[in-house]
Image 1 (cartoon, protein in one colour):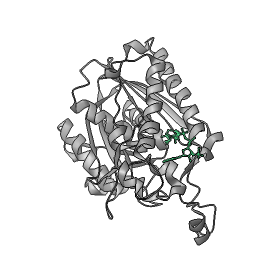
Image 2 (tube, protein in one colour):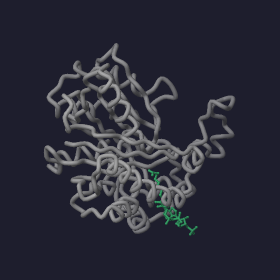
Image 3 (cartoon, rainbow, N blue to C red):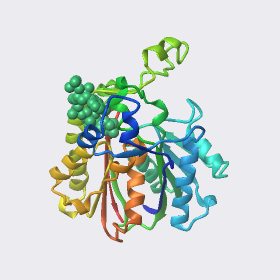
Image 4 (cartoon, rainbow, N blue to C red):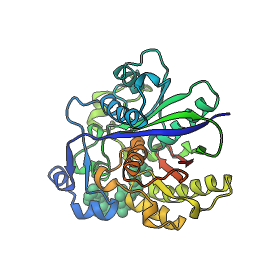
Length: 331
Ligand code: ACO
């Protein structure tokens, strides 16, 4: 049975930088509050007309170039997002069209902040089943257009950013390289703890003027509950992955945690006993880009020379659903 190697990474973020200071002009907040509670100093927001498919294409092209591959070598696309360009069809087919890959399958996957790792399990299974040799995995998010930028929405609005990250995955001959395992979990009992109620196909019409007036299209969250669960589930997810291979936290060479909040990542780091140089944090510059945080952070870490062949890479995520996930990769 083949294994799955990550042979290229890439990312793209909009060029519009939105600082904490800029947000203070829109809502009652402060740079001190945002930095102290979240670690975020700035994020990237799209300009009018920029689409998720555009961001995803740019990230994908970088991953293809990194791998030394042509787009035509991609045999399947798996795209994770919670913010599709359209209610349907999924962003995956728009990306496929932009890459000029008519005919290959394009799977849209909705697992919010855990989307990239859910996608990694799907892509890894497609490769191990020997149905596809080369799969493009993308996490992309446009959060900024869905936020309540008034003081009412400040708890959410300061957290999120836009961006895309991509990884090109390829079958390699067995051995101990590549994706060692992926572990996924979900607990829908917490579905409404972090969600956007509208648009909803349960209602006629999907979006009504009353929904808009009530702000039901804006995401809401019980931040403390999310924080409590994230700081418990993320270390557990890493420990489960390590145990499956008889490994210890000290064996991890690089941890790429979902960038939800710097304080969450720091608590995960402490619980695992990892030194700073083994943990990737870029939330300071990009905020929380949901399904895109892990592939963006991974692509930056690769470019910074933080992964050597043979290194043990661990990725872990937690988010809306609740969903959470971990993955181990022998680089
Ligand atoms: N600026 C200024 N004040 C604010 C802001 C803001 N942006 N947002 C909330 N406040 C106020 C609140 O209104 C509250 O005021 P009050 O005491 O007068 O009522 C006060 O700050 C404290 O609010 P809390 O919600 O208790 O603040 P907390 O310390 O819990 O921090 C935060 C909030 C940062 C959202 C935190 O709960 C958190 O990090 N939760 C994790 C959620 C998360 O990261 N979600 C990301 C998406 S999910 C994911 O990716 C895992």
